[in-house]
Amino acid sequence: MENKLRQIRDAALEEIEKALQPEEIEKIRVAVLGKKGELTAILRGMSSLSNEERPIIGKIANEVRESIEDAIKAKKERFEEEAMKLRLATQSIDVTLNGPALSVGHEHPLYTVIDRMIEIFASLGFSVVEGPEIEWAKYNFDMLNVPHDHSSRDYSDTFYFNDDVLLRTQTSPVQARVMLDKKPPIKIISPGKVYRNDEIDATHSPLFHQLEGLIIDKDITMADLKGTLDFVAKSLFGEDTETVFRPHQFYFTEPSAEMDATCFACKGAGCRVCKGSGYIEILGCGMVHPNVLRACGIDPDEYTGFAFGMGLDRMTLLDYGISDLRNMFTNDTDFLRQF
Ligand code: DAH
Image (cartoon, rainbow, N blue to C red; front, side, top):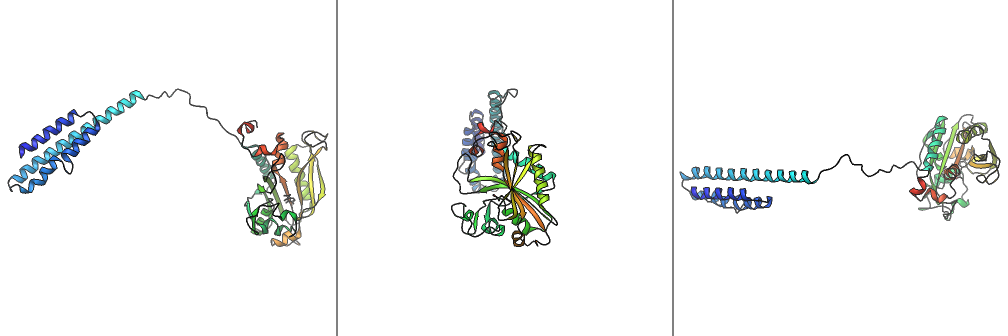
């Protein structure tokens, strides 16, 4: 029995020494130490030995197992070392070589305009509020005093999910949300995406951007509206910019107006940008309608306010001299890289 054990050991150690591949080592391990291995079979048969023999043979068998295990471990480590050396020798990296050039992007011109707007309004103490693009018809139309038979409510003009839920057609519903949410004084702007069922062409897109503004406080008058929006136009286009307020009609304001500013390109002389008029249309505005205040839980005898809304896409086109609105949304990096 002793001899048999030593034979197993010597044969195993020799094979381990000779092995050239890690897989061969594994085969040897299974053949000797595995469940059906040679040594395992002997250890299993120990019960048939006499009480005197069993501890002696048991001790030798354990020593044999340990020496084989040690040899396997050492050989495996040698294989790993060699593999590592080979990798280091063949895969050298030259860390001084230039990598591929990283192309750095920049802000979309539309967002540069939005950021500039936010900066101007923030300097006047307005805070920025965001509203959802999927909106209740109630906020988009009803609370803004829009008549039930108004054409803008038509399915042909507005994207509805059902009778009550739609893609907002304007940023004005944010007004209602803010008034319902907190007590005056209120002084907010809200830029964001709006949607209308329009065909895409050089001046129309079913998705575009607006910026809404709202002030509610005691004793707010049309003079505050004009002073504030005139200041904004001058901040945007330069000190020498003049503004004109033309009467208009919106359902959520009374009185309502549209504000034009002297064309920043020709300073009022008339050019291609302003189509010869010397002015460009900037925004719609007005004193918040008492019906809107009431619908939003604000007493019109105690508080007044003004609101305004402007299209940001057209502003960006004018500012950057871009002739086609579609350029704003096609994500053509060759085009955008110019700005
Ligand atoms: N929501 C209007 C539109 O989409 C723009 C507007 C006009 C907003 C007057 C206002 C306002 O807050 O007072 O045409």
